[in-house]
Length: 372
Ligand SMILES: Cc1cc2nc3c(=O)[nH]c(=O)nc-3n(C[C@H](O)[C@H](O)[C@H](O)COP(=O)(O)OP(=O)(O)OC[C@H]3O[C@@H](n4cnc5c(N)ncnc54)[C@H](O)[C@@H]3O)c2cc1C
Image (cartoon, rainbow, N blue to C red; front, side, top):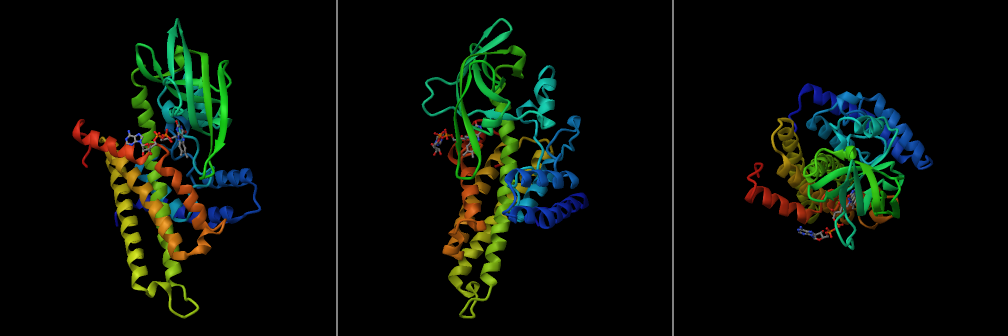
């Protein structure tokens, strides 16, 4: 097994599997439930099972789980096709992890307590004339520019935005969503069911103390945050890939009208065998990368590679599963139809695949990072 888990992690995996099978799957399938009520019950169940605080720092009452423990939890949730339910994990610190005062009290702690909601504002609209920038005036930053695709931005109290501070370099800065000069210019939803917002900044004044770290560190901080999220996405994909293989396995073994299960055909077995191989490869990469990260070693290239491979693999697997199950799998509400919509966006979110391939090449050719 790629996992070779310690007894603690086996216990975690079993606890999450029980939670998923006994509570989360029935919640997912209860179509009469309002989404907000489903999220509330998911949150309560997750808290009771000790899952909710796993991605939160110990200083904020979280259990600051290791990368491997988070991978085990997310993989197991995905294997039951419930990893996408809102409310499973409490808000993580994101780029605000480790900030000092005043941001710790004004934004980080309220974020972790669920009292404030934040958005990550990195992507610029394609037609932006200039990358978002700021000039320093006394003890204030004056920000201009635009951001798009801020997930959850429509309900956010603040966004952490990447801006170029003139003469000093890129920086992450906290901008309150209702500060004068901030306009929410567009709200939109995407195929996977998530919601996003675009913002314009016009002469927005924020205190210099809203800078997260020093100017010049902005890109590193932003990419650090993205790195954690990439492993989380990969773990969800690997779990979902396992669920897809399980779904197809049951389909291939089920008796058909002519008495011959679909799995008895060799050309179907070829496809199925390929699915199993890819799911296994993605899983092996994921667990190895989590272990490297937990040793405190540089795992940037490995996390990128795992994100690319896992998101592309789950996309191919869901696509092939639909092909093998047939038209029924495309009926609205079918689990594979829902999975197809959900996994497509993951090859773009948190870094699209080709840019990430270029990053791996750079890590190898220019920076001599990692082991791949
Ligand atoms: C569900 C979802 C959630 C998201 N959430 C957020 C969020 O919270 N915050 C945020 O800031 N952004 C978010 N994004 C935006 C996401 O980060 C961008 O969509 C992604 O980085 C790609 O940027 P783009 O859409 O501008 O496409 P582009 O950068 O224009 O890329 C389009 C295509 O051009 C090619 N390409 C571009 N650059 C290169 C390169 N350097 N090397 C090789 N090929 C290249 C690739 O084929 C690529 O797919 C989200 C996106 C999705 C789908």
